[in-house]
Amino acid sequence: MKIRFPSGPSGPGTSGQGNSAIRRRGIPRPAAFAITAAVAMTTAVPAQAQPAADHADTQAVLNSYQAAAGPGAAVHAGNRAGSWDLHSGTADTGANRAIGPNDQFRIASQTKTFTAVVVLQLVDEGKVELDAPIERYLPGVVDGNGYDGTKISVRQLLQHTSGIPAYEPTNDGANPDGSYALDALVRRALKHPPASEPGATTGLYSNANYMILGLLIERITGVPTGQAITERIIQPLGLTRTAYPRPGDKKLDDPYLPGYLGGRWGPFFFWTNATFTVEPSKFATSGAMNSTEENLTTFEQALADGKLVSPATMAQMRTTVPMRGWPANLRYGLGLIRLDLSCGGQAWGHLGDFLTGHTSGTFATDDGRHAAMVTNAYVNAEGKTTRIQVIDSALCGTPVS
Image (cartoon, rainbow, N blue to C red; front, side):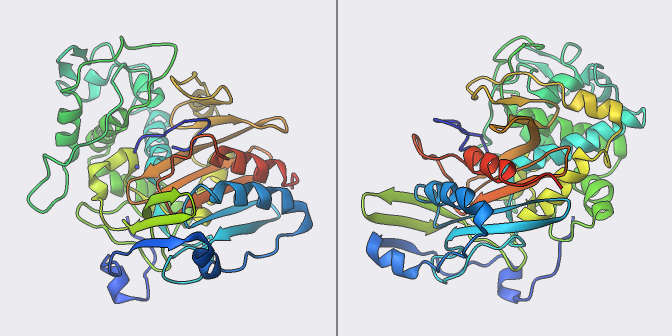
């Protein structure tokens, strides 16, 4: 669930019903560990759809990215007049098909924007104050081991300036059914001492911040965070392919994008199917959700268009800080990443990486352009084309509607 930045960003409800009972139960095909010569894999990859002439540059960037990414990669982009799709490689090592814009996958840390929007809606409703200490809403939760909840604000949790260190949940502490309780995740995260004093001018990305915000949502709304996200965002926007899964629910709805772990060594490919290997509740409000490229662009564009929070709150959401270890063209707001585009202007969105083998990102602009990308592997390709370059190319190659 960490967002990884080697030479550039490379990085964890109810959805629509699927057609396959086997896939709906989240039972994968027999896990495949493929060791295949590159020339053999080439014959298994479907022919790429020929892009329109004005998207050929983005297709080239996508191809370059996919050459060091997963078995496949895709872009869904466009403007208010419509969307277009580009593909490279294959969605499934056992079948020749392109990744589709409606394929469901683990969106990982893109979940943070959904969590942030609910918190900020509570701000708009006067139920939460951004600069109030978290102790006001969660007494005794952020306390001890160097932490003082009276000195950490809601804003600092949203912006990763709380001083809470980067946190990846471990496999211990699960419930008997294999799921994880949100309050238990927070307690385990806070066993790690602070990395800095609250209010730092440079953010330190931490899943723990958004797990605490999940507890805040539950305390204020009186319902599980997944229900709050569903009722406040997913249902009003008609995101029928987006879901906050219940604890213990590892399924993805058809059509879904398999995820792979492994990589490329010289002329060989090494992939193992990891689609259903991680319990989503382990990452909770920092990264548990499932969605599609198409639904995610709808969400990010609705947010950019002011349909989810007030203008005043949006201004707060877009107040950014630099992040430790991140490139200069990315800054973090309140659950939003600001991307400075190579063609001028800015886009707003988030990135996500999940250990099931899904790496993704979605961004939108105020003038109506949007772009989402996904690859079906957990990618750390140092020195190679990055997903941010793919997204930048797609946005800059799309005319303003």
